[in-house]
Amino acid sequence: MTPSSAPPQPQSVSTSVTRSAFFIVATINNDDASRATVRAWCADVANLTRAVGKRVPSGNLTCVVGFASEAWNRLFGAPRPAELHPFREFGTGERIAVATPGDLLVHIRADQTDLCFELATQLMIRLEGAVTTVDEVHGFRNFDMRAIIGFVDGTENPVGDEAAHFTVIGDADPAFAGGSYVLVQKYLHDMKGWNALPVEAQEHIIGRTKLQDIELDDAVKPSWSHSSLTTLEDADGDEIKILRDNMPFGQPGKGEFGTYFIGYARSPQPIERMLENMFVGLPPGNYDRLLDFSRAVTGGLFFVPSEPLLEALAEREAPAAQPIDDALAAQTASAPAVAPPIASAVASSSDGSLAIGSLKGAPRYE
Ligand code: HEM
Image (cartoon, rainbow, N blue to C red; front, side, top):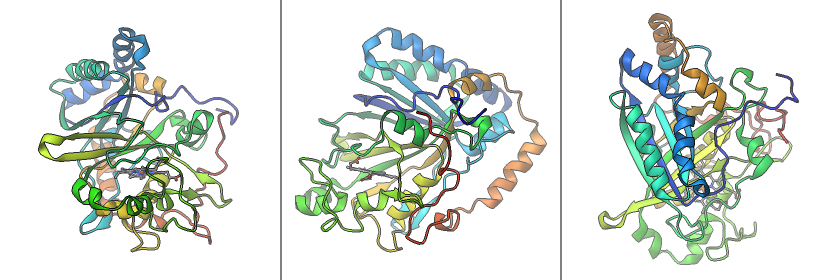
């Protein structure tokens, strides 16, 4: 691929904001037949999404599918997406971004819950007996895109060409161009504690005003605000963005109130750096006070193949057992249960900005 050529068509990573979203995380059963079922299913995803979506053309139904690191080895073997690795945990004690089981992520979005429900049903019928669902969340749009904590969520997202620039892999990994990485976490909130705070204190924690959703002035925005700790810059001072499509969810009858965080990017590094800033702090100890009221109960990192690659994966031969098991063992051994601070893996410039070589200088698709 030349630098100027467009990458293969991505899955529907970047879509308009919808009213409804389903998030399904599943493990793949550990036998050859189950793996063969999942491989064959890769060719069904686009067709099923088209078929269900046709029933309500205005419903904006889309589906994105991703695979976790070890699942990739078992299903498809080599070659592997260059930056795919097991979810890295950050933080300690009460404040920890946990890694939880999950081989497969299905992210379904639409303006009607029935569309999400029907597509999830059809996709899971085809996977019957081959996977075990470990988490399923049905999210909803909350008024004017407010997280369950009452603040507008998604304002600073990149849009259009900028969204593609920050989410679609290009020449940095040619065999996987058109793909993305996606990181998900399910958060549960202490709403009693949060609601007991004065609005001004909440605004300091988020870094924006609550009603009007305006960013606080630097003079009053604390360095531990959510906005400060998740704003990243490269060595040239240009902002590095990710694409989020968080959804509120919950069961008021059971006192459950949550945010399903989902972040797409063309490398896991900026998302991991944000997590480190939030959970460990920048500098360490100066952590995100939103975490005093929010607990991460799941965490997974997945690779999202381009649309043509997803279809082609159906034809992949089952990887030979021995070399892949070796590769897996090597990978697992080198992945600590609790990852070292990403700062040690990602060069920071002297001003504390993020100097990601593979992000800087990569082609823009515009
Ligand atoms: C407890 C779950 C979370 C909630 C309720 C939440 C909510 C919010 C809200 C209300 C905003 C301000 C409006 C906006 O620009 O969207 C925001 C901004 C942002 N959040 Fe989160 N968020 C959560 C978790 C995360 C996580 C885990 C990450 C990254 C790993 C993240 C990354 C960002 C980024 C990059 C921004 C934009 C910052 C800026 O440019 O000012 N968020 N979030």
